[in-house]
Image 1 (cartoon, one colour):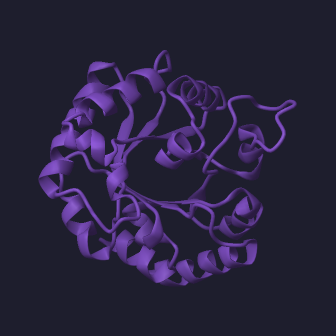
Image 2 (cartoon, rainbow, N blue to C red; image 1 turned 30 degrees about the horizontal axis):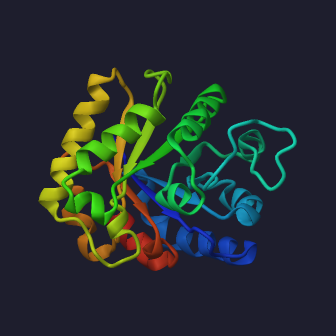
Length: 244
C-alpha cells in the first residue's frame, strides 16, 4: 500500500504560484517518488483550475479543500463537487478543524458532504481531531469516535475512505503528538472503523508534520501518510517529507 502525502495549502498560493510549485516539485520528483507514494494537492478554490492544468500528465492528484453538500443550485459562494470532478479532482477534504471551528460546520452537514462524494464515486478525506481542552480532559477518544459515528453514519462502507486524524492543538503550532500518542489514537481509530464495517480505508496524521519528524511518525502502525499544512507550501520541504 502506497503512503499518502497530502498538501493542504489553505488560503495560500495564487494560480501562478500554484503552477510554479507543481513544476518545481516535479523537477525534484523525477527520481521516482511516485512509485511508493500518492501525492495529493488541496489548493484554494481560485487556484483549482491552474492546479488541474499543471497536474495534467503528472501523477500528482488534487482536490478542493471544501465543497457544499449539494451538487448545484442557489448557494451563493459555495463550491460544487461536481464541477471539481469535471476538473479532474478525485480527493476531497471534508471536516477540517478550521471548517468545524471557524465556519461552524456540524457533523450532520459533513455527513451530507461525504454521502454526496460517495454518490460521485470520489474519495473523501474526512478530518477528525480534538482540541487541547478536550485532550486535557481526556476526551480524545470520545471526541474522535463521535465525529466518526456522526460524520460517517449511513455511508457505503465498501467505498474507499481516508480519515485524517489532526489534533487541533498541533495544527500550525509547532507542537506534535508524541509517537506513543499517535500510535494509541490511530490504533483506536483503526479498530473503530473496522468495527463499523469499513473495508477500504487509510489513516493519515496531521499536525506540524515536517521533514525532521516524518520518518519516525511513518513507522507508527496505521499511519498511512500525512495531511500537511505549512510544511507543504515549499516544494523542497514537501518533497523531503514525501521521501521519508
